[in-house]
Image (cartoon, rainbow, N blue to C red; front, side, top):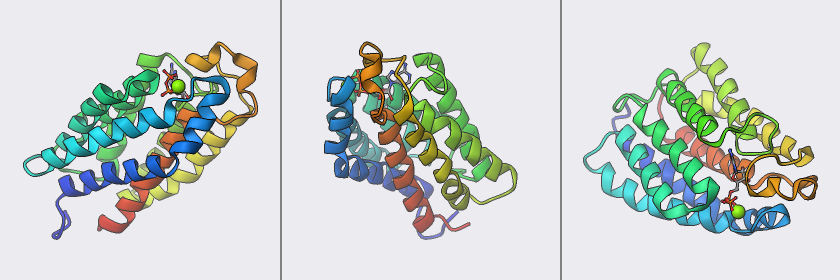
Length: 217
Ligand code: ADP
Ligand code: MG
């Protein structure tokens, strides 16, 4: 563990960075969601991460990284609303509750990421290619797992998985939605990147920056 910063503090910084990234892209996310959805995705994600940050800060004084992240996820769900409120909140909460205490290594984080992904897949019943956040999360988790299995330290494993996440996000542009609100308008979503796949990419990218700066292997 880093001698300067506790892992609970790093976890709190990750949630803060996620909020900053969402706020930076809020208008773009609203626009993407307005094409075949209801345009609320940027606002919902911002509301969720604002509440998550407050909760993470409260939890970080006494809690572990896992407690910070699971509390933040629960609060996200409560505040965000929409399909993504339940799904992203559950994702964050499951990652936190599957991190064993304060032990953030690439192996333990991979385990937690897989549990988070499985919970989103079972709650939303979407698959790869359905034009959802899973199109970012599935390739990210796979690439992260490969790096972790090769013994790559956490921050580097995270960085190495981002290009796969980006490609997954970009691939949603050519897909027709078959889950969630935009499935109603189907073809109208063709040519526009999925809002949830986009926001979750920005979150992964922001977390990667924090880990690169604050995690000493
Ligand atoms: P709502 O559709 O309720 O307005 P948001 O606009 O906040 O919620 O979120 C829309 C995003 O949620 C989509 O772009 C998609 O990525 C994601 N999403 C919707 N339904 C599902 C699902 N069943 N599984 C996974 N992700 C989903
Ligand atoms: Mg929406």
